[in-house]
Image (cartoon, rainbow, N blue to C red; front, side, top):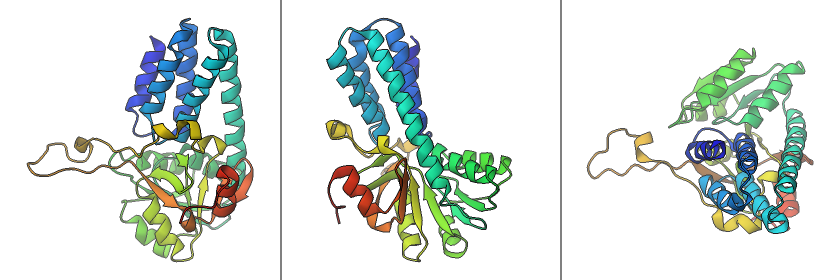
Length: 289
């Protein structure tokens, strides 16, 4: 079954970001509907949300599927149409957010980033296509080293790119950085979820007056109806240490939360907003201290 294979890909993926996985999730849902068993939608949505519980777009999409099933029940064609419209809206919002984030890149900048964010990649690609001259520092992003792929793709675009270790990036922030630009896995009231290591990088930069920016969209706002599914994921110990050692426990967190106070601006489809303004509009509350 195609949908089962795609769902397993999502469940085991520990490299790609939320934007990539939401497209895969929609493809899997459409494959399920193509098989004609609409009654499996609730089970599918539950598995999807449990597969990537740190990524708000996945939780949003799962909650959307459950709502569509409750509303339309056995009408598979109507659910299919709703999914297609949902993905179109997602792509439109994402495209606008990338445009707004591109305005944050200036000639002569040295941009520091972390992990592999398809949104960050597209922003930098857009800036390059518009004739901007800048450099990028990437982290290798252990343990999966997905930052190597970002560095490779940027260098192949003709962008001067530097690759350094996850700890070495702090020296680059100290001496080279004009700004930091990160992707987003989830917007919370308390901050922004992204690859582990983002929060200390942001704090280090903010303490030195270097602006920290995130690029995301409204689909990455954690929905209330899916909040019970959300958790910060950790990975297996053998991803860090292949052979276990007696009395040694390996800690392998995948994500952390960057507090709003360390962020200069957030680029979404609605423009670039400061963290206070963004949280007030997204959640109707002031950021938690």
